[in-house]
Length: 80
Image: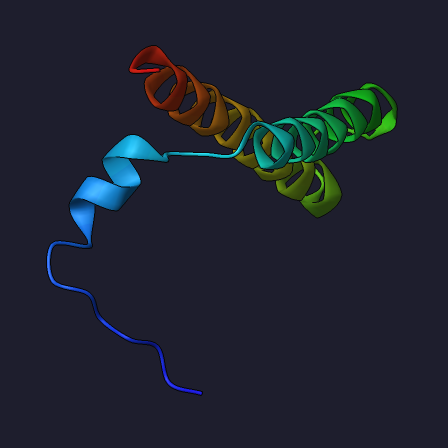
């Protein structure tokens, strides 16, 4: 069944319902898991190897994901 477009829907919907709290919690836990595992792995990997560099990128992606989710939860919860 195709999606129906309702006049007036769009950006106003996302401004009022930014992020469901349960989805935000699950996303935060996922981001924390990625960042935590990457951080622990960095302690055991040899510097200068390809694995170390990839794990650094993974840690950066995890932390960035956590920050984005935190911002979305804050913005979404501020107007309620």
